[in-house]
View 1 (cartoon, rainbow, N blue to C red):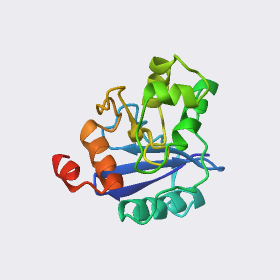
View 2: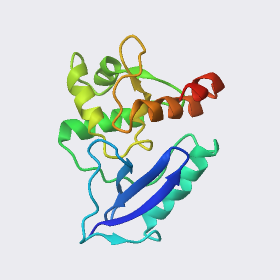
View 3: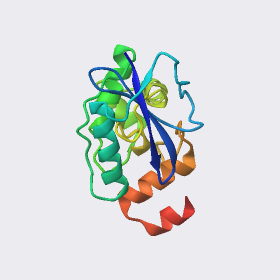
View 4: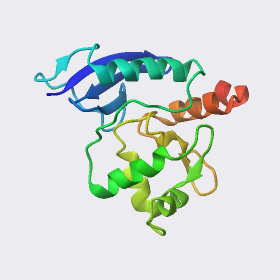
Length: 166
């Protein structure tokens, strides 16, 4: 069974999706690869992973949380899950390149493949793919949009100039 709920973030409405084990999706409205709510899914904001994710996102956007503890249940290929696990290791306020991400995931030289897997990350913010940047530091690709990526990085850096650019 799939459960879902919504979270109104400072950067738009977010669809939260979970199964019985953990959170399987965090999607901004109009995000690339955002699924449609299936009629068989049940809306239940009290479902434990959804409730926990909502609380943690509130703390994150309030500047009180730098790490998420919500149990996760992402669906993807073994390679994608390996990349998403490596993304979780990127610290709050840190950015790394896709090449560094591939290296950390044990696949040196696979920056493009790591980038493709990053783009399919179903659990944005909590699996912080916004912290992955181009090799020259440019903000490249973000399924939720570059404006949101810039805003999330600004929140984490405390850089008001970067936030105003978002």
